[in-house]
Length: 248
Ligand SMILES: C[S@@+](CC[C@H](N)C(=O)[O-])C[C@H]1O[C@@H](n2cnc3c(N)ncnc32)[C@H](O)[C@@H]1O
Image (cartoon, rainbow, N blue to C red; front, side):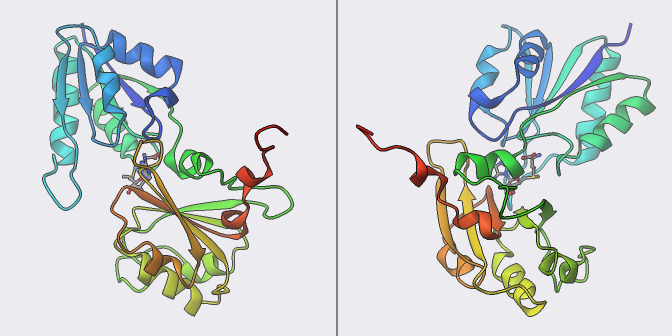
C-alpha cells in the first residue's frame, strides 16, 4: 500500500508557532524532508529512527533541485512510508507546495496539507506591525522581490503596486531592496511612506529596522536573508508603545 505525503507549514522561525496538527504530523512521520527556514529544533520531536533528509537551499549556495525533492517524496511514499515535507511559513506562499502536490498526485500519492503561519503576516506581527490596521489601510499585498521592477523577468505590475494604497509586504527582496524602493518611488509612491525590514523573524537574532521608502534600503544594507520588508503607514504604527508601562 502507498504511504502518504503531508505538506507541513512550520511557521516563521519560532518553534512555538507551528500548528498542533503540524507538530502531530512531524511526530508521526517516518520520513521528513526539511528546508532550512523551517523551525529545525522541532525535528527533535520526531520519533527515533525517523529518516531526516535535508533538502534546504542555502542562499547563494547549494540547493536540492525541485525535481529531486519531488522524486524523493514520491519514492518514499510509494514505499509505503508516512512522509512529511517540512517548510518554514506556509507551504503555498512562495513555498512550491503546489508543485509538490501535483508531483505526488501524478504518481497516485495521497497528499494532505497542514497550513502554517506565513512569515508574510507572522513576521510583521512579531515586530508589532499589524498589516491591515483598521483606519490606516484596507488591505495588504504580498509580492516576491526576487527580481525588481526593472528586471526583464518581473511579471509584477509595479505601477499598480505603487498606486495600490495597500500595505506592501515583500518577501525574498533583500538583495533587490534598493531597486524595489527606487522603482516604486519612480512609479509614484511617496518617498516618505513608512517602511520596515524584519530580519530572522521569530528567532533570537530577529532585528527590526524602520525608515521610509526613501531610506530603508540604505538603513538595512547590512541585513542578510531571511527578511521581509513592509511598506505602508502600518510600518510606523508603534503598537508596542501603546502598551501600559510597568506599574501602570
Ligand atoms: C521562499 S520564501 C518562503 C516563504 C514561506 N513559505 C512563508 O510562508 O513564510 C522565503 C522568504 O520568506 C521570508 N521569510 C521566511 N522566513 C522568514 C523569517 N523567519 N524572517 C524573515 N523573513 C522570512 C523571506 O523573505 C525569505 O526570503
